[in-house]
Amino acid sequence: MHVLIVLAHPERNSFNGGLVDVAVTQLMEAGHSVEVNDLYSDQFDPVECVQHYSHHDVDADYFYPLNQQRDHYQQGTLPQDVQRELERLERVDLVIFQFPLWWHAQPAILKGWFDRVLVYGGRYSSRMRYDRGYFRGKMAMLSVTAGSPEKAFQPFGRAGNMAQWLWPIHSSLYYVGFDVLAPQVNYGIQGGGIRYQEEAAMLRHLEACKETWVSRLMSIGSEQPIPFTGWNDWDSEGVLRQTSPMRWRLA
Image (cartoon, rainbow, N blue to C red; front, side):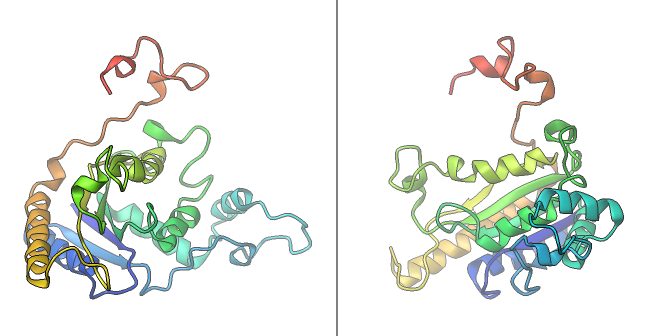
């Protein structure tokens, strides 16, 4: 199995960076090949704009990002950094996104990666989505760190339900066809001036998180993905059919 790890943290020596190192070691020891994509180190530009497109009509008075993505994909003239990212995704069996939860979402550089790399007309279209998506047969998962304790991220916790915070990213990955694995979430990862426990206890906690990550990676290729509904589950208006078992399961 070939694994791509997309790191979105500005400090390579951070705990997020350490989780990448742990994953690389464990996966390679298990016989997998691994590629690391450090978005900050590569200085990936997350901002979609007209300057990225060489064939855009400079006299046009309106910029249509999706049209430019589609046209440049068809012409083979996508921006070099986007083409590089697409080539990396072509090689993978599993892509792991490693990032801290910032303001209840992924860092801007990773959101911009989604905006620019998953190009319209090339990686999704009106017909090429969900369980008919381009990346079907490939797996994706999120490896996330959060500052508050785990109980705070439960449905009635003060930080809100983690499943809801990660749902937009999971949905985006499924939208382009990935089999989305359950996320690996490390809670209570504090840094800087925010501390909930003494340093010694924190270090023990960080090591325990790494050990849990290693344990999961040992069998990552055999996990079942998160169940999503697909085209055959929806009616002509995109609503879950009355006959779908998913409609009647307990929440």
